[in-house]
Length: 92
Image (tube, rainbow, N blue to C red; front, side, top):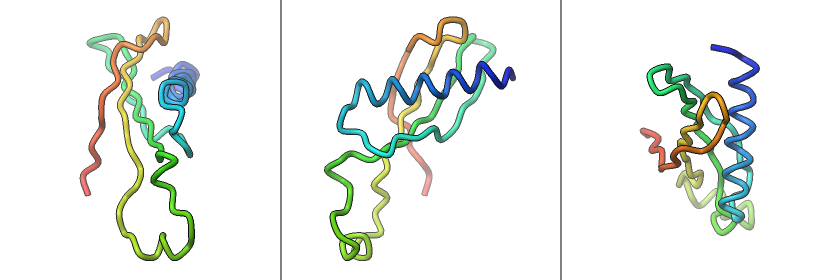
């Protein structure tokens, strides 16, 4: 795996999510995988919707719900163009 290319793909995926989902806050790269068969990067990005952010410490203590949402973005390795974005489900 080319580290520089993977880093660029991760940065691009985070940028795409923040651009397409303006209410996404605390957006972060969660994982990346090279898919040589399709010449693409599968990038997992996590974020919280602004409406899901607890307003008080008490709200945090009352809820044990995972408020993060995850998307997997498939980016072309050559151009870093978005091919597909779909939900990613984390096994609890």
